[in-house]
Image (cartoon, rainbow, N blue to C red; front, side):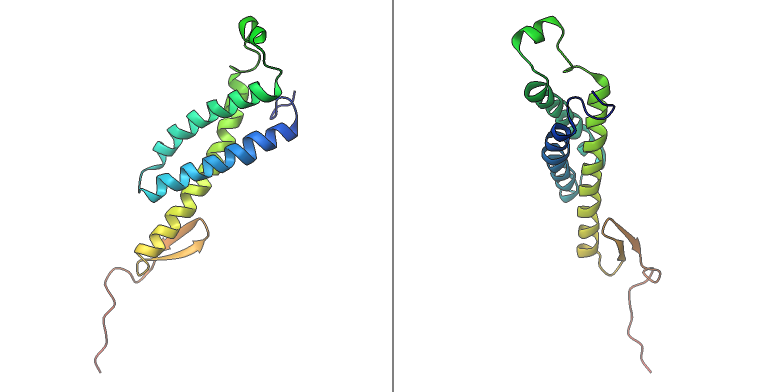
Length: 135
């Protein structure tokens, strides 16, 4: 048992990073596409973290009906739940930020400029609409 992964780093990479991270990325992206605030994605990622925790327990922790009855194994481990939740929140935040940047630049291209794949900033001269000059 490690600080970050419970059984093996490969199980952590497969379940949390690849499967859970992909789903969390899509949750963040969907929240941004519907112009919802990030806290809604946060709540959904907390539910996803519980599902990822269940997959870790069910697939890699030797879960049986007897282990459930006796001690629940590591299914209810707050430490590993929080580790999974933090990793998934990072993926959701990346998906949310990327999608929101794309939306802002697509809809308000005259007001914003892309500064990185995850951020934008307002144009300096965006206070007034562009006007043609007559000489």
